[in-house]
Structures are given as C-alpha cells and as structure tokens.
Length: 169
Ligand code: FES
Image (spheres, rainbow, N blue to C red):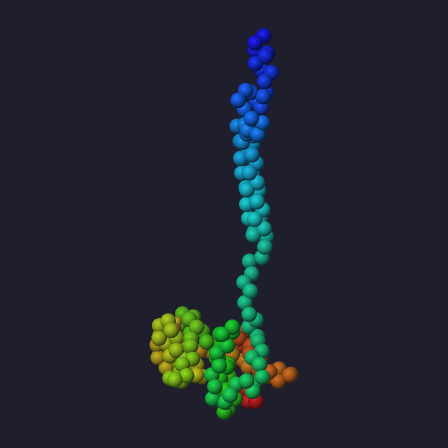
C-alpha cells in the first residue's frame, strides 16, 4: 500500500525538487544529443572537404605585361605577381624568370650593382639571366614574349626560349 503511494510521485513532484530542476536523465539526454550533433557536423565537414576539389589557384602562366611604353629603355622591371623580370634594352624586350635555378627562391634586382641577386644562398645573375656566381646550376630562363593584337606585351611562362631572342618593338 505504502509502495503504491510512494511510486505515484513523479520525479518533478518529489518533495524538495523545483519545476525547473533538471533531472539526471534530461541532463544525460541533452549531453548525448549535443555530442551527436557535434559528431554529425564533423562528419558533414569531413565529407564536404573530401568531395571538394583540391585545386591550387595560381595566376595564369600566360599574362599581359602592359604597353611597351611602360618600360623605359635600359630598365629591369620586376613583376611580383608573376615572378618575372621584364627587361628592355635598346635591342628590344625579353622576359626573365625571377625564380632562382638553385632551390627556387625569388631573386631581387639590385639596380646599384646592376645584377639580380638571390637572397637564399648568394647566387648572382646579370640582367639577362646569365649566372655570375653562386650555387645556381643554370642561368635564369627566358620566357616567350610577344605583342598582342592590341599592342600589349604578352609573356608565356610555359615556353622557354633562347636567350638570344629579343622582341623588337
Ligand atoms: S636558391 Fe638561390 S642560391 Fe640557393
């Protein structure tokens, strides 16, 4: 008889328990739901990453370098985005790679010394890419350079050319 009376109390009706008090069962279900939610979001993120293409966005290897008048005669201009030097001599234009042939550091044009220097291991090159000194095994390559139909310089980094070739404008 007394068992029946005792069991008729629900958890919330027990003496000393407020209506807003969380029971252990509620607490555990909320923790479980939270953990399942986090795990679900994690698996969605991993699945999305798995199916999204692993692509590196790099600038196009063929690019316009602007109007020839932008480059004075006897100038070496570094195009940082493309890592290329546009060199203009009285004979014409050529495009030289700014990437060192030793271990791939980006070189710097030193106007005072009139040479291209690699900051990593000290290789030095003339403005036409010829190696002066240092561990670089090869000169800096020349890229194909031409004029577009509307008169801008066009450089193709996929095409190495003979350094003796210059674009006469
Ligand atoms: S990377 Fe240029 S000298 Fe080593």
